[in-house]
Length: 323
Length: 249
Ligand SMILES: Cc1cc2nc3c(=O)[nH]c(=O)nc-3n(C[C@H](O)[C@H](O)[C@H](O)COP(=O)(O)OP(=O)(O)OC[C@H]3O[C@@H](n4cnc5c(N)ncnc54)[C@H](O)[C@@H]3O)c2cc1C
Ligand SMILES: Nc1ncnc2c1ncn2[C@@H]1O[C@H](COP(=O)(O)O)[C@@H](O)[C@H]1O
Image 1: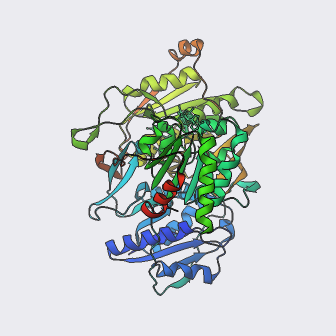
Image 2 (image 1 turned 180 degrees about the horizontal axis):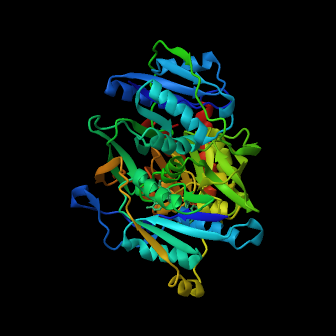
């Protein structure tokens, strides 16, 4: 028996979310009283793989196969399912990011496993297996019972504290059996947003809405973000208008994020916007309308004109940083 | 080429969810039901392709797993322009059951491309599309933000962490679509509404597919503590609170 996590890598390196996954997996494994195993696909140096041992992973199963080089969810599913069967995984945990969302449902069918997606906490009970998840885009929570022997969970990014737990960790190679006759989608072109803090990875996010008035007013928002080492985001009308790139749009129809701090500037707080940010640990709102709905979701607020508040906030922040 | 768009029927996204029977169920009274926003955009894109002769797309169908009460939503999809519709008469308990019902429709028809939304706004599962693909043993691409079909050849953009890829995909395949797939949802015109009345909804009975999960109970979201306000002229107070109280900077 084991808890198995999918330790995704980006050009051979793990990210914070990989260790969040391990931290979650380790606690789940101790609830089920079993070991934590990770599966890694592609070329990752042993030194990197062994970092998982700092977060409770006692075995890393590493596989590298020419057919797994491009991300074909059908083939990768087969490979991970074979690993799950070999280690007799009773639970599989993936990140609720793009690749986790692509793989988890396919794995669920392959392993005949019930799935709880987008969880942000440990199960409340193991037998029966009950875990809470957000439904209606944050309008309610559901206690979901998974009735199958194998369970699959996808974990929201930034919802789990890293928990260091150093264990002795071994690496095992695995040769998956893949169907050579299957054609994978062909990558024609690949484009990376270089040098930006990814919205999904960011611990602090500074976000602007229509109250910013025009695309030309974004400089102070960007400066604030830089000072805070934050990613930038926006409400939907802002990306629709082309004031900011589409990948910054948060909300029900954009990105769903859960940073530690979300600063909403000139955003009214429509339900569809809140749906994307309601899991943030702390929301700060700056809005000139005291009755704006955003203040119902915010922990801290400033009622005022963004154009005046932002420079003052930036100055105050510089003072703190220089201390 | 024939496209199938899977549509789910969800409460209007502005509605405040109320629980009933001590959290055993959701109170459905007064809820307005709509096509899941993603599915509406997927349908819009599928229709744009059908209406473009160079795409090679001949027919756009929609499928829904649900009870007869969802037919107004299906009719709406027909009014927007779908050619025909399928409904499996089953009140699905989870994504697995939904996908299995959809698979039964697909196995008895000839679709080349299936579009699903990235998530339904009710259960926020993000599961049906991938499950359906695995049940059919088809290729699936998720995070699709752009879809082009030319003479039956499919090109998509897929969003990945920190970037984007352009892929050429062979049919049959399932695309799970997200932001970007279409600009604005297409709106039903009067003529479409009239025509929708005569289009067929093929109803099939539940095929016995099981569900793997059950909702034990619902809880309202945790009430957030009320907002603490700071004066616009002293933002340092706010920063202090963020440092020492919330401990987030
Ligand atoms: C199906 C559907 C899906 C949607 N999905 C999303 C989504 O994913 N994300 C999203 O964001 N929206 C989404 N929307 C749109 C959403 O309903 C709102 O229209 C949108 O979020 C409003 O954006 P906003 O807050 O920037 O603008 P507004 O609602 O116009 O709010 C601007 C705010 O700025 C304040 N303001 C004005 N001037 C100033 C100033 N000088 N200083 C400070 N504050 C000022 C105002 O008081 C106001 O509160 C969706 C809508 C639908 C129907
Ligand atoms: N009851 C349903 N009938 C048909 N399609 C559905 C149904 N539920 C979900 N889908 C499809 O699956 C997508 C993802 O839904 P979900 O996995 O429930 O988040 C939706 O956007 C729809 O395309």
